[in-house]
Amino acid sequence: MDTGALLERFHAGEVRALARAITWVESGYPEGQDLLKRLRRRGNAKLIGLTGSPGAGKSTLSDRLIEALRKRGETVAVLAVDPSSPFTGGAILGDRIRMMRHHGDPGVYIRSLASRGALGGLAGATVASLSLLEAFGFDRVLIETVGVGQSEVDIARVADTTVLILTPAAGDAVQAFKAGVMEIADLFVVNKFDLPGGERVVQELKTTLELATARPGGWKPPVLTAVAPKGEGIEALVEALDAHYAHLQERGLLEADRLERARFEVESVIQEWGRRRTHSHPRLIEQVAAGQLSPEEAAQQLLGTGSLEGVSH
Ligand SMILES: Nc1nc2c(ncn2[C@@H]2O[C@H](COP(=O)(O)OP(=O)(O)O)[C@@H](O)[C@H]2O)c(=O)[nH]1
Ligand SMILES: [Mg+2]
Image (cartoon, rainbow, N blue to C red; front, side):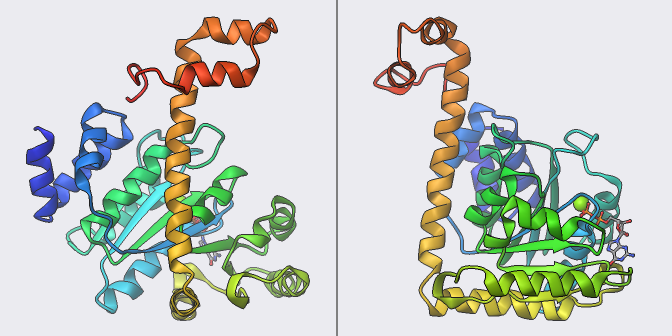
């Protein structure tokens, strides 16, 4: 199928066209780039980032969120990015069950990706996939990422609202403080609140947040609790998501969010180009290693005025 035909079906709201489009973009096919160029539509989904350690309950929570949001009549897409999943490119078991549960509901689309960005953050293709979901017209797009290093920082740049999911497990909160995620999460959820130690984590979080620097527009990140498999805490989470979005709107912060996301998207492309070019021009790299060229001179030669052949896909 060519791009034009796919685009037509995409705009007609065919989920299979959406799925194909994401595959093109994700696999780095030239058709994917062509599609993104011709899309010229952003949509206006509310983008929610869910991040946290593997096993924290991100997928279970998002499953419950889908349910709650569908009850309100919103359409929901979920992009689950799990580079740690051994099932490359596929969904892990929990995600499969979740997908089956919502199968047949045209207002829900769930997709798992296994890609990782150059520096362990979100891959450019992942962000492009988000744009596709948004352009398709979903009201909400949830993006689930395993909270390791760069990916949390990236997700905060891409999402309107970033939710950090913690558990009472020893060290979980400490890890959050270390990684500096405290500053980027808009909401905190202590999931698995049915397990011992939850109240302590909540108190630790609250204490730390009181000392933290003020957020844009004076937002005070709430600390919520949940028992995801039972659906406990989901209503409060949906309300908190709404409250944060309303805050962004009232303070005129959404526009800045969109700009930051666009900046991230462009940076991702530049990074990807750079990575490919350094691999396709080993001589230049050797010259840098030998001290014959400065890294900046080499970069200028790689990215400067030349054509983009061998780079764009
Ligand atoms: N006891 C308990 N188990 C939970 C809770 N939330 C999730 N789990 C379980 O924790 C495991 C990992 O959950 P999952 O949603 O796949 O975590 P993810 O890796 O963050 O997506 C699953 O076996 C869930 O059933 C909770 O609130 N309490
Ligand atoms: Mg998961």
